[in-house]
Image 1: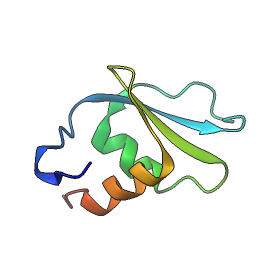
Image 2: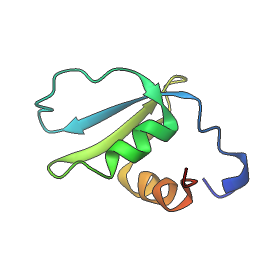
Image 3: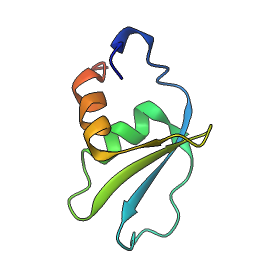
Length: 71
């Protein structure tokens, strides 16, 4: 996450909320959508799982939220 200019915002990602995500399984979306949605989650701990299996932890998600290009 250190080089914000090389972030592929279109990579497939899935948002996971622990414990017990009430919304059942969330669909796979882009990293941009997952990061934006993570900012709207109020309860639980948010993780993002990328298509390659890499898991983004809450502190990494916070860094991405700061780097998220505004549309």
